[in-house]
Every structure is written in C-alpha cells, then in structure tokens.
Image 1 (cartoon, rainbow, N blue to C red):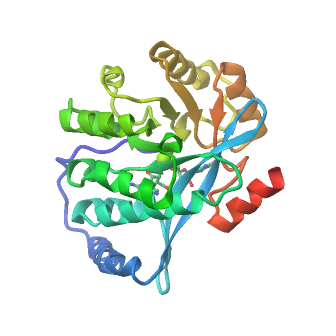
Image 2 (spheres, rainbow, N blue to C red):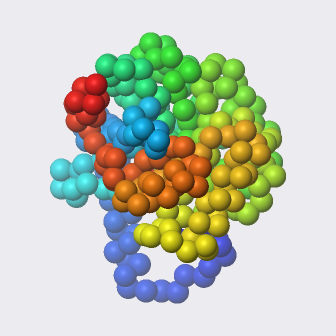
Image 3 (tube, helix red, strand yellow):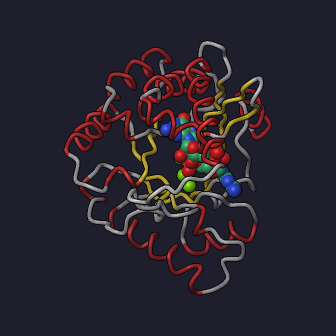
Length: 274
Ligand code: C2E
Ligand code: MG
Ligand code: MG
Ligand code: MG
C-alpha cells in the first residue's frame, strides 16, 4: 500500500489528466444512480480464528457492477462518494443490506462494516446504525465498525462522543489498515476500540526476516498493552497463517481462507462448514 501524499502537490498539465477527469465525472454521475438501478451488492469475506480455522465473522465489502463500465473497485469510488457526500447514502445502504443478509446466516457471527470519516462528521451515524439494527433485528453486540487510522490525526471530540454512544448501544470498533498512516499512537487508548486490523502490507510474501516480523511483533505488543485484539489482513498462504499464529496473532482474513463473496456463497460456505 502506498502512503498518502501530502495535499500540497502541484499539478502540471498533462493530457492524461483529461481522461482521469472524464472517468471521475462519469463515475460520479453514474454512482448517484447505482442504488436505484440495483447495481450494488455487499460481498462478505470470512474472518477466522487462526488456531482452529473456524469462522467467527465476516467483513462486508461494497461492490459496484456497472452495466457498461463493468466492476468498479471501492478503492476508486468510495473516495469520490466521500468527496461529494453520497457516502452517507451508500454507507446507510451497506449497513442496512449487510445486517439484513447477516440475519439469515445459520450461525450468529460478527459482522464488520467499514465506516468513512464523513459518515461520522456529516452524518448521524448513531441514528443510522440504530435504525438499521432495529430494522434487521440484528444484535448490536455482533456489529463491528471498521474505521481507519486517518480519522485520528487530530483529537476529535465529536468522533469520540459518537464512538462512545455506539459503544453504549453494544457495537464495537476496529482500527482498520493499522500501520499505514500516522505514527502517533497516543490516540489509541483515548477511543473505545476493541480490535486492531494489521494492514496487509505487513503480511509479506515470506515473513522470514527479522525486519518482516518486527512490525508485526510491535503491533501485537502494543495491542496487548492496550487490551485489544488483533486481526491480520491479506493472508494468502499457509506459511503466513502459521507464522502469524506463532507470533501470537489470534485472528486473520485473506484469500487463503476465502475471497469476498456474495451473500448466497457466504451462506453456502457456512452451511458446508457446519
Ligand atoms: P479494507 O477495509 O482494508 O478491506 C480489505 C481489502 O483487502 C478488500 O478490498 C479485500 O478484498 C482485500 N483483501 C482481502 N484479503 C486479501 C488478500 O488475501 N490479498 C489481497 N491482495 N487483498 C485482500 P476491497 O474489497 O477492494 O476494498 C478496498 C477498500 O475499500 C476497503 O479496504 C475499504 O477501505 C473500502 N471499502 C469497501 N467497502 C466499503 C464500504 O462499504 N464502506 C466504506 N466506507 N469503505 C469500503
Ligand atoms: Mg476494512
Ligand atoms: Mg483493512
Ligand atoms: Mg488494508
């Protein structure tokens, strides 16, 4: 994963900029119609206990398949939706759809939903979440909200208050993509997190060298100190899973265990595993 560049970069005129802008405008216009045209889906990726490889939950990941443009990655359209504010509608849609689908799983599993900063700063996330919980009759104790590190650059009392309210409802919070952003760690105990998600950039192909595992060990120590659980993202090989477990990382997700899949496939996976 690439670190975010500073915002002060100067743009020189480049002809390919036209194309980039055109694509952006197209996506922006088309995205506004994606919900009513039924082009969106929620995919689910299993979350596992590494020791016995049992599934304890799923991360909900938004998918957009446009009839003409084909599948568009959330990494491309989420930032656009964050800029134009449409993320409020998308975010509410994901929460409602994911909890509705998760209610029909044959086992009570955790459901993790990604939340954007904008949903907290501009939306009424507490109301959106409680309405969705009620509508789906989904227990708040099983809903985990994933927020990224970049939210915590400055001490943010609104954010803290919002998180505490949701925590009081029963929801939990995971710190997503941990390690990719900001080096200050002081914010962690100030907010009600229960889990850290170790970014997949630390789960390297071999995890053989001291340098490879040093960051992972540091994160595990830090989490232990704060009483937080850790889940590793992007596990693709049995070696990586074994090494993480050996280092003391209890939880994981990645292509090794399952790619993100549609609701029917995820249900089928649970039935086969039972
Ligand atoms: P994320 O929350 O860090 O999600 C994990 C990403 O890693 C997903 O990409 C997933 O498909 C991918 N992944 C999982 N296992 C592996 C693996 O073993 N190897 C590799 N190479 N990749 C793996 P995806 O689905 O493309 O989502 C990208 C990002 O878009 C997410 O990163 C999240 O930040 C954002 N996103 C997705 N859905 C939503 C949503 O509903 N709301 C918001 N606000 N953001 C979302
Ligand atoms: Mg996530
Ligand atoms: Mg992540
Ligand atoms: Mg990540």
